[in-house]
Length: 357
Image 1: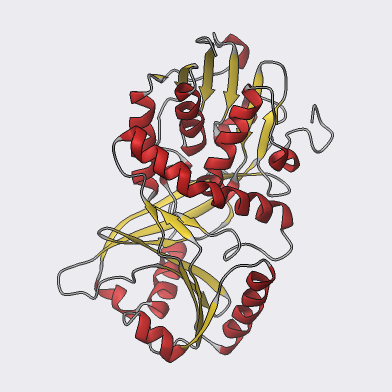
Image 2: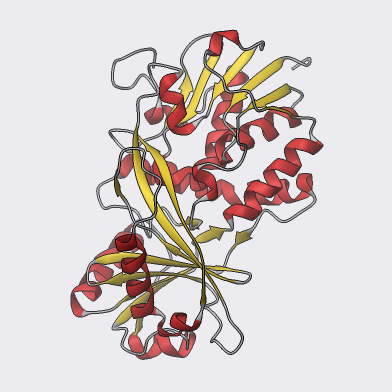
């Protein structure tokens, strides 16, 4: 690249992934963010399971998620090497459990969709579930064991990205960007989540609020499951994702403007549903309850692509920012090299006819 200057606006998982990859390829990179690695990326359960947790019929998001999942192992391996610390990837798979008969019916439909897409899946009875994960509730009706799913500790991931960026020579500016044209750079990547909307007209998004809880294992309490557990509890979804010292429980999801407060109702529902799946969680210590605002688009597809000769957008990932980080970074680097990835064509910022596609 001959030392060309790249400005990356936004220091969440997308912006940091782009900055690390670009610096590794010879770009002189500056990341602009008033509070690096502290936005929506820091509030996540870390499931990397696009097919298991995806919505039926959402073919575009599912296709992008499945493609990015394939890239995650090599992304995490290289990041761990470049950072000198773990990227936080977990490979134990997902256990999807059903609490009642209606939930079991939903699991049968999910098993069919996974099988149609060539994913390995094993159907378990409630008794088989309990034998494999004794800490789970004995009243669970059925489950699916999905070994190909991944998960990541988002805090470890962000730490590794910051370290890899630092080692690659990335500079950080905490001045708030108000005008992309004022940035002194040959190329600009806009990856600022919801803040992107004020910086480019093609970055229109809405905030989608999500709340999570952290739970720490206390002495004498049963250890958490060894893999990610996705519970269906009377039609509601709850996610229990292992961490080294406990679990992350998530996640609520609703339209909430720009309100970042954690609601009592959200905490109540998460605890109740988690306890229906993992009764021993009542003995855990409650850690921080956090809320984040996910940058969501109208069609639930991210905005990834070039919008002019100098600017590339990489934002609007909704609840899939962690999952889509490897694919997005590859796509942005391909744009900078003048060879766009066909895999992300459906995410072009101009797809709704409001600008260049």
